[in-house]
Length: 235
Image (cartoon, rainbow, N blue to C red):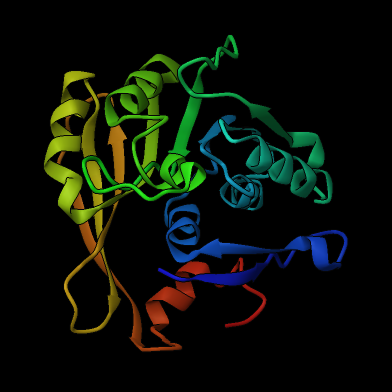
């Protein structure tokens, strides 16, 4: 979905650097699940660092690491972390997932991964890296997650509806199984465009749900407002 200005309620310094352009998918993912039990959280492909910052608001003790292969994104996340009240618990790394070796495992790994697999790519390399599986294929993503996920850990991510079958097949090969699935519809009456997935290392009954973001343009549903209310100053 389109990006919107997002301003954290609990930033310790209220100035323009605290306002970020973020897309709705990332906000949904960060707000979706309770992570209060986690001690170590990894945000893969952090971008401006929004999801990592949301994790600090949802968990008062966790150490959060955030990685991004794009240098400009890494620098922006680093600046946003340093300007937040949770700077001591946030660390950004300029690294690909494939090369990231922190010497530890994570209780929660969260990611808004590349969207497309075989779609036509744009002329912008940075957009290709961000939106397509150029720098991180699903196989590489799941291999890295499997390597870094703690026993009994959880994976939280968003995925286009049309990529579920291929993604799930690869995930199962790494002994990662869907245990939670929320279908997201942008506007009431439309078909779902996005899935929020929870993966774990053991098979369980899948908790299915659905979410509609808007009744119409700029008219957010109450369920969306309730899910994200702790992070927006206003709609």
